[in-house]
Length: 175
Length: 109
Image 1 (tube, rainbow over the protein chains, first blue to last red):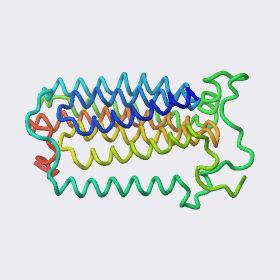
Image 2: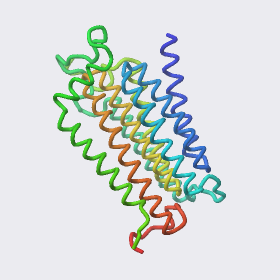
Image 3: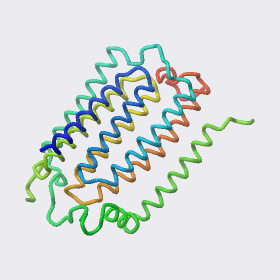
Image 4: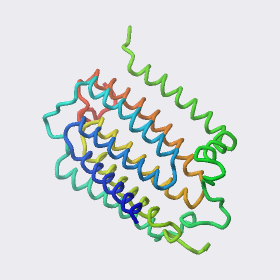
């Protein structure tokens, strides 16, 4: 009962912080509330038995990526914007319509208007996390380094490319 | 069991998580469409990726840990995307002195 309440509290704070983030004028405030969103989502992950995902969500998103955003905002000195950042009423109408359409489609899909079979449990999937036997990390690490090893290597190449690309793009041209 | 469609197989927390994922995704779409500041638009894209992650984790309770492994790769892609995207924003800022998306509609200069 109380666990359910905690989960709902995390969900509510995630949604609330996301709305605040989208509507604030100052980008630094937006970053702070996005960090709140990530922490709430990590709480949800914990209660959904995804402990490892919760941990890397805090470390990677809440730590690394958000610091990168803050760093760029400070580097470009954007912390105090005066003019209004939201688009006009026409843009608001179009954007709101598209967002509501997305929400409606997703909700309908999740409630079961679709015939997509993957939404329900099929036969003999072995359920995640025999926590008692394997611990939290092993059920994720083992397939990652056996079945998905090629994907993992390609991810490494992707990250290397991103590093090289980022350095190249921000380098001052010396010509 | 096999003819169950929809959320019948998920428990309460899974259902809540899936709907939170839908709402967060819609909020992210709204932010991308409504904001002019390129950095905030970028943060809204990260929000949409997180919404996808929530759905993956929720459904990984039905289908095994593959969903959580996929979340791992989504996060790696998000990190790469953030690095390159912010580098592009810095390069654009060097040229235009603004990060207002309405101000650079054309791709040449």
